[in-house]
Amino acid sequence: MSEARTPLLEQIQSRFGDAILSAREALGQYTIELATERVPEVMRALRDEKPFRFQQLMDVCGIDYLSWGDDEWETEAVTGEGFSRGVTGAGPGRFAWAERPRPAGIRNRFAAVAHLLSIEHNLRLRVRYFAADDGLPVVPSVVDIWGAANWFEREAFDLYGIVFEGHPDLRRILTDYGFIGHPFRKDFPLIGNVEVRYDPEKGRVVYEPVSIEPRVGVPRVVRADARYLQAQNEVAGKN
Image 1 (cartoon, rainbow, N blue to C red):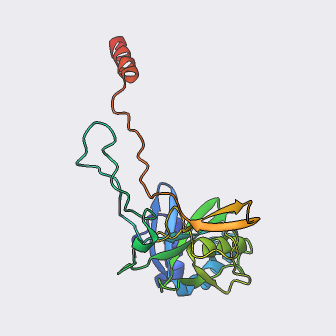
Image 2: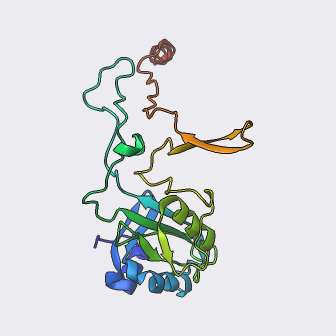
Image 3: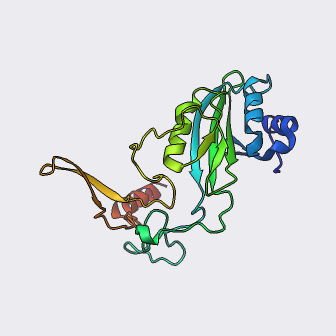
């Protein structure tokens, strides 16, 4: 458990003890990691108890940590010219389906994150809790605590495949009913698996193999520009 340095985090750790796996403040944002089996109990207390009063749920989202820390960009061994920073597309989502990355040894791959607001105390809190099983990620639903979680949790289920246990109507909300897979997972190709178009000859929608090649879009990096150099020289001349 990390050391809390703010009154809010100290109160939370004191009140909930070992249910709080970590607590920190960064860039003015308070974040706690919560033991998944304690989510209903702690969330209800955060909503109802006077020191907290987080009565408004702003958002619930999913996270996939499959490629956490990986990078497609060259940083240290690059030249100062051209488009040398980009490397061959082999990162998350940039692959042929047959060559998709297979999760191996990933601990705590899927997480749900709830963003809470206390209007009474003018505070915001970010609460993260991980699914124990990466093959079938399941976390508790908070719909019975905040009704607004209903569509948020459906969205996380649709896009990440995170199952919210206790949700009253957990079904897809953004993708089509017949859609296969979860498009925000890091092992789902960015170009998708199929292309869909209307065929006027057949008079119906048809599904075809994807014709787009996976690639890395490398933005041009302006390292030296005469306009900026002139402005710098003018400023230097005035000084």
